[in-house]
Image 1: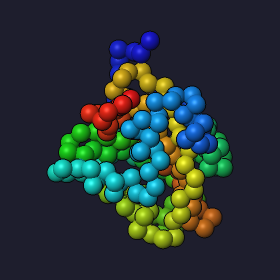
Image 2: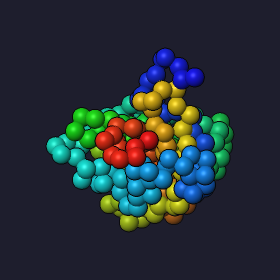
Image 3: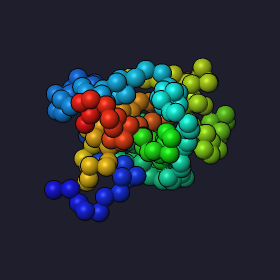
Length: 186
């Protein structure tokens, strides 16, 4: 039973699947309106900006050096106890929270030109990555979230971005407000 202490701006624990189809076998509802966002190619930031009627905003929830989860460290092939730059933000359209995002940037990626990644402020990470052709996105994984209340994300997607030998991990967690009002909404 979900807890009464729900913080919708908290990223819930998530089970990751190597494909959208595999996640869909576990939770067929991801094939509904949310499926469009989970499979969207290109910049999610740009797609969200186009969905807005008035304004798009990035709110920083937390940012700084922290230890990634064991699973995140393994995905990035970094030592389990090594800190990384961890950035969590809420992407809002027309003052409505739509997406929570968590980025893990290994220390080695922050060297040289990668130092800029620590100073994005309220600028969307996607704007930086997609305006720099040296960064390439790897394949998506689809995540099913363990929610503590209905306001938290049901599903997520994540991918690694690569620039030479450097990489970072971006997870995007879709809040129910993103598809509110769409037929067949989760």
